[in-house]
Length: 73
Image 1 (tube, one colour):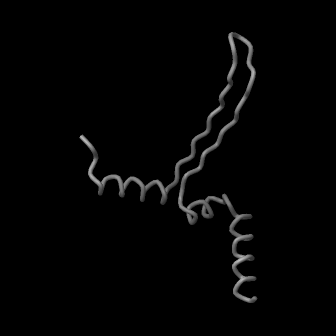
Image 2 (cartoon, one colour):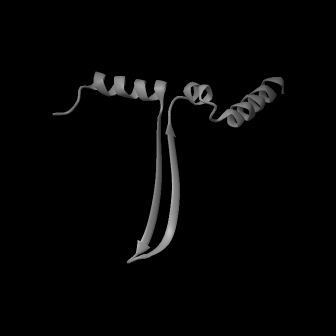
Image 3 (spheres, one colour):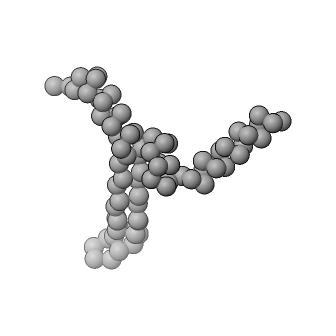
């Protein structure tokens, strides 16, 4: 059975409001020899939630500065 559309929208709304963070360490190797190591972090949330948690503050300041310059010029 497929979930109803309202359930998907509610799930997406909750993820964007609260946020989801996934941390993963991945080592790729052949046999017992590690070749590549990856340290991954995924943050999925709405912009307001990201800013509330202190993420993307530099991006927000830069974006607002560019928008302000466009309005002035």
